[in-house]
Image (cartoon, rainbow over all chains, first blue to last red):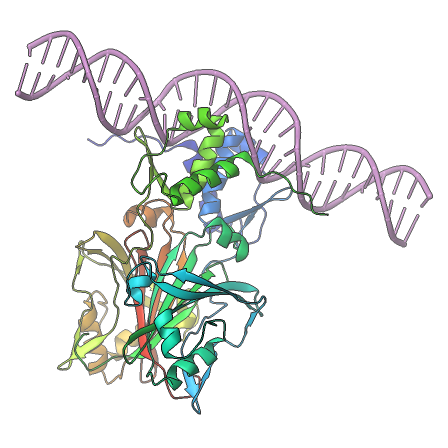
Length: 253
Length: 253
DNA sequence: GGACGTCACTTGTCATGACAAGTGTCAAGC
DNA sequence: GCTTGACACTTGTCATGACAAGTGACGTCC
């Protein structure tokens, strides 16, 4: 026989509030009862109330503003921003996708080495030398921020006569690679993780918003050339389009 | 002049522990000092220690086991599982991608209505009737679980003579649609969010792992036909491949 | 009328204390 | 040798209390 133990008070309280939010009792944007009010209404102590609210915060259901109160977050998964990363070319020139994205600060260029993720992705070992370049870009219409990191192995830079300046903008980079005789192919992998505190502040992420990490490896004739990593929050604002295609009549790769 | 205020104690403590983890002082899988040990070492109270540990837990850096202690999580973003969702066809037959995924339970079929996300995605209004079907599948080699939801609008089911049984497996569904004269095209959108408690238990997600949500809308000759939603955790195990392609010589869509 | 200070209310932070409950060890008992 | 129970240690939960700090309204003073 399975013993049934009552759930912890703060869990019950979180479930109750979550239910009230989902039922529309507390619509998006509305103000929840204050902690002291919840303390009285449910007959529990303030730490219990705060623990319940903390759970709802990490779930992304609620935001709290000091001195004001707790508010129900706007609807999740709203497809407000699309991050179309299709590489397009017209008249022999690569276009920078996403013209609504603007670059606020100067890109930061540096020397780095491949790690356990980027190395194998580029067909290299861990710890090989490469140029790195970090960009912070903003989606003007919505204010959504994203971090773009470009990893250019030394071999790629030398082969395409890029010098030691990987800071050039994306279209130029692609054009230079093609001018060096490469026929470009790309493939992307996507994952998500909880942001680090640094990323939370840099991207101005509200609590409870995971980070979407897109890795695009662009390959040429002889193998992988560069890796681009895009990090963007998935608040109520980000809903990136990543892939389009049609059924292939070929066997599985 | 900007006043500099010292960070909260629990934040400082979290930063210190995070640094020790990143520096290798506490390698992945190792046991952190107990709460009481941290209390003594840093001269703070237990709630402060617990608040710091809670932050590291939601970051996904640490897992805690009652009665045992706090452990450093294994490396994040390890590309162990790939979720290749390319639709392939050979000899006129659609293959179910991902043969390593097995289905544990019988799929749950039901009637539903489109919502604010699925409606527009299918070129319909919110609240229109559709068949729904939920599957829980498991990646045998790693034990990673995923939830797949298929939304089949009534119009699609009628047009392709699917009857009212949307529970048929994916390859059969695609074949039936093509047999009805459609030339299939798909497009995917990806986002991530914090899982609900239900999803956490159903997918057996550890703390601090966001949920990756993939929407694939498959369209035929006359517009969108079906929508498939895949939900999978992004623990140290999931690193889905979503897109492959090459530069197109056409103008931007 | 406008600037300003006060005050009530809110959440943030931290300490102390207590008990419940899961884990592993080790010694006693069979 | 094996089982079993006690025990120490761990984290989970909850209460109480206190002060810091941000917000907004309201009244006072110029």
